[in-house]
Length: 345
Image 1 (cartoon, rainbow, N blue to C red):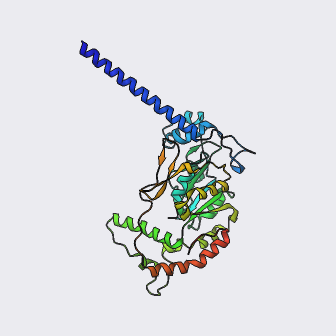
Image 2: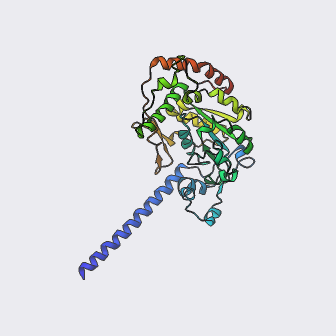
Image 3: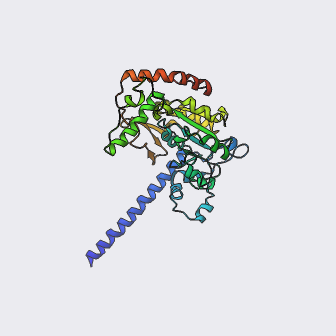
């Protein structure tokens, strides 16, 4: 009997201990969230009501915790209604470029309490089959959010696909468009590296970068090679300018986003008419990864996927020189059109 009483007492103590730890963790999470996130977030410009709209504290709590349940579909219609959540068409889109840092930019902007991101690339405007499903299909692919929040998606293929500018224009002619670019030669090599890794995983062989980037018959830059063609930013941008004024574009320096992300993010906040909320606290350098990671609060941190920052293969220096010489006039025109000069050779 005494043994049974002792066993019962131990069990009760374990239960009470678990409840105490759970309560403590809940308090830490709540205090951390309230301490780091502003209770009121004014949304200015077209994304809010006239003047300043208040951004409810419960939206911030949802943003950092419970919202993932809605994204996963683990919620009832009644829960969605009670929390005033809706699926909104994006008010801004990261349209490219591939291997320019689109994923990093999207994840970093998601630090802002007024921004909600689509977790996957939707490929609505660049995919004929998806586009034929209609705008309502596209809207239902968006995450749940509060009306005051901005939904953002990214699909890098949008920038180089001919049909996309007109299709986006038909959806929203006043949408904000984000283009993140890197030094063109570096971006082309990064593009090649990603494809090479995919080939190696399937035990397939692949040409060296030099053989693809340089036409063996003319010894000139091979503009038919997609990695090279994508890096001619001005050619693609000119097609977009047939539909949208340059004021609706913002150029993000992808190289600087790697080394000094905060100033770039602050420029984006300003472009999107968002109050400044992302701070140095939200970004910390991970020496092991060689990239900045994200800090939402004292509990939740996040680093980008391990595939980011692949080691590039060695490329013949003469090929790099030839490519940079080739890209130079296109870069100058890109600076002239966008009004932003980047530190490219």
